[in-house]
Image (cartoon, rainbow over all chains, first blue to last red; front, side):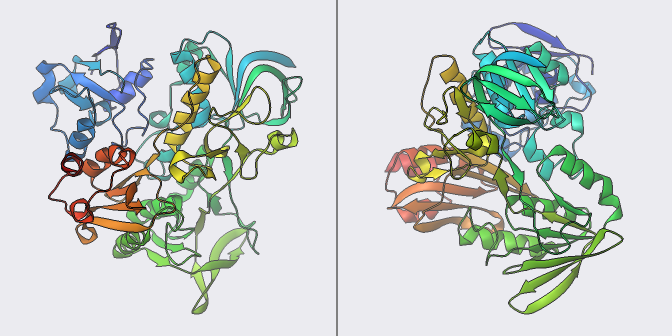
Length: 105
Length: 414
């Protein structure tokens, strides 16, 4: 799990070297990117870790649970690429995963 | 030893850390420091009674930022040091390390200390609280050696701890002095739901039960003497968790002349009655719009972070009053509760769905308006809650209660 690519809201691209098994939310936070609020700390109880996942990786992620879908629905910026970063666990299959941070509500 | 800081934040919980991070997000260029009696850098407090207690998350995974994140943001941390005195006229605080720190602006974000019992035997070892990281490190250290766990207090902390210990195979008893659990925060429907769910998983929930005394041997607790309507009973306990609320930590501010009868009183911009001193988070008593303007303390991550944002805006000369919609969550077993609004003062509960199916919401109304929702495994209802409440609409109770009609449709059709 060598690479996670994160585009922040200003368009800047950050290349992170995350820890295998951690969530994309944790990797972004640990990588020094402050944009994600992650208010519930990764408990899938809010929608403040909203990211857009690059289409190339869409089918390598597990399908979102109904709760995640409902929480994402509450965002005005929801697209087909939307996921909650705290629900994406980084595995070797996701090496090179690219996400963009969704606009703040 | 003396130093000077533009914004000095006392407390490193969600409110204190929140102010520091919000200031930097707003490109505040002055010096920012957090002084905290907690020796640990900021961590996610809700995880302490859930995944961290259960051993499902590591210490690194609950840190709000990696340690380098604070230095990268030019936020100084003075940890393991408490503020013992505030001089609001000279704008200096004195700390337990005999340091004096001068400030331009002071933000009091100390939260509170877990309440403890003072009955006989209460100084025995093995009687713990769950408030700080150190509390839970202690519990994690002895979890493997304990079998009988007694939890005092049927609030969220007590019930979350009961769920963790019960899932780990411990014999768990919850003692609640009132006639239902969660009495201060929800209506009867949710209370009874949780009592049944815990009992179904083998937890002994004892209502109208109070601790008379703790018994012990060799300085460690071994049992609890409980008084209940049936009389006295002795319950074995290898460890006791006391979850009966917090006392706000505001003495130095009150001694300096700040107003407050339940924590430190703050206005809509989170200002205390002392010049250049703000109060935020669990310790801040404020008139909350969603509590009909009554002065309350709201103990939640939402309140801490939204008050933190209010203070950051005020300090950055872009003030806006605090009026954020309250919301909260609790995870026990596979039961995910999400609440929105404040239910205090409700007149009626409308049950949407069937609690026996484990997926339902309780909609609280006052004067026929929706004031709050408690959503159990029902995120779809939760995400509509804020709009439902703010609409101030009178919706048909039958429509609200019908899970076949989404709350979105209810609003659109009315």
